[in-house]
Image: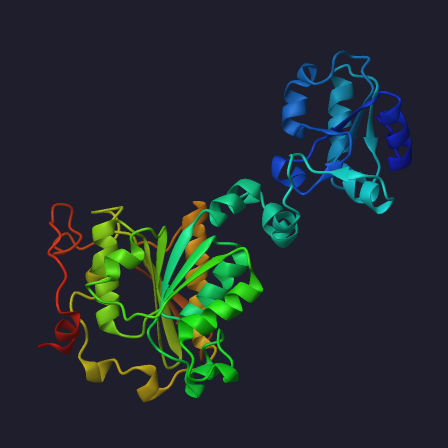
Amino acid sequence: MPKDITPREASYRLAQGALLVDVREDHERELGMAQGAIGVARAELEAAPHRYLSGPDTEALLICQSGGRSMLAAEQLQRLGFARVTSVRGGTLMWQAEGFPMTRPEVGVDEDFHERYSRHLRLPEIGARGQRRLEAASVVVVGAGGLGSPAAFYLAAAGVGSLRLVDDDVVDRSNLQRQILHVDADTGVSKVESAQTRLSALNPRVAIDPVPERLSSANVERLIMDADVVIDGGDNFPVRYLLNDACVHLRKPLVYGAVHRFEGQVSVFDAGRQRGRAPCYRCLFPEPPPPEAAPNCSEVGVLGVLPGVIGMLQATEALKLLLHIGEPLAGRLLQFDALGMRFRETRLAPDPDCPLCAPDAPFPGYIDYAAFCAGT
């Protein structure tokens, strides 16, 4: 049974020539490790100790986060014949608490990056590599209102490198009950300018591109061409159909969300990249409902927190798509009932006869979406 030693004794032995090995995973060591240590994940060290320890008589001090994994690794190495292996008691946490120096495993450390995203860096599914992928990503959020507000807030906080916000409206006091990007003093100000102020204050690392334009067939491709993910935060059917058609044509994943009174729904439409395997918005709604069947929030009202729930789910789906983790909502419609506090999932199959996303369907071009949705 190997013994453990205090960080003070480990520091002394390190100075006398012992080898200090940090056996945590790569994403953990990104946050810093004991100065003088080399980084080798526990499984890798146990599988090939001779690559790192010159011989059975090498004095090796193993350190992890709190001492548990390093003790297990020390036990395994002793079974393999390495007799002079010990574990550092309390691990990196105690090493740092007792004032011993720490270092980063790379040159030119970005302290803000490591501090700001430390909770992401601790997740093996994200780590430094995934966080840098987010910083290199571009997301377009159409609508800086009820859905776009929480979605943009969480994407900026998460570190998505570039956010383009598209909305031609100005802040009205009636918006403030749910559109949390804006404050009372912003009344009359462009929504995308107000949003830029809040998001830049939250995370100055994120590049915010405010576009005070109404989305149209003339500008949609220009606005989403360089996006990795598009978020539909609009509040009307012409925008939804237009975004869907453009995203299928340009092969962009579209994160859809909608709210009505006390209910909301969210899905991912990725038919552009997965023709015949994933549906598009037209597969769900081949034709828009009549206007009287789908009044907007200004006509029937909406529970203020509801867009927050749906917008947060949209941000979650966007992050999963950017990080290539989890199971996106492609082919599934998630419906939320706030009054019953229930979620319900409906499977969505691609329509083999869809005029837009069927495998062999040519792009039909953009149409007059306002007239289409009005039934004229």
